[in-house]
Length: 102
Image (cartoon, rainbow, N blue to C red; front, side, top):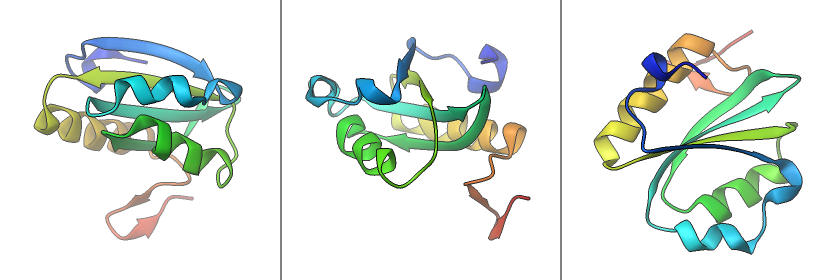
């Protein structure tokens, strides 16, 4: 993950698909951008304040292996970072400007 593309984040962590557990509920209310990766390639990028529920939702609906988490101190900062990362990586499962990437 390139720090310049993701902006100035407070925390960076990588977890596996099997690490999506209720332990993540401890970070509810904090601003996260997450990158779902398969074979090292970003396949989906999103933003949330409820990390556990959002990742649990994706666990059964998207095909990925790892999750890269970036925490931000403000909503607007996380929103800008998410947009920058989507524009840069163009993940196959993100809808970007009304059209799916292929």
